[in-house]
Length: 101
Image 1 (cartoon, rainbow, N blue to C red):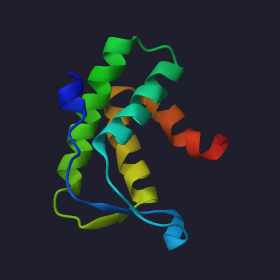
Image 2 (image 1 turned 30 degrees about the vertical axis):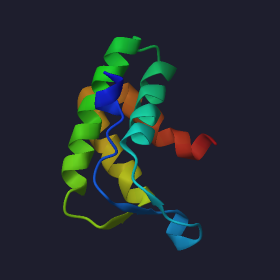
Image 3 (image 1 turned 180 degrees about the horizontal axis):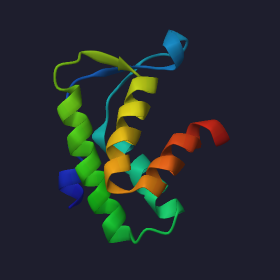
């Protein structure tokens, strides 16, 4: 399964914090890890968290296909939207993560 998760994804630049920080390339494994962390933080079993993260990453990558760059806010928002379909409580945690740091 790790080989499946480690796919980089499309070549998309993520513009960080309104351009105040250096942009970075989209990394599927980074997105996957953040979704798994949100799921695990509310007690979701590891296997289920991995499956949800895989499905959400696939949906987000589908959305990214025609975009050369997006903001980190857009990525966070679209990920939360797709996570909401699979696990509303994890989506809430994912959305709040930026606020609580």
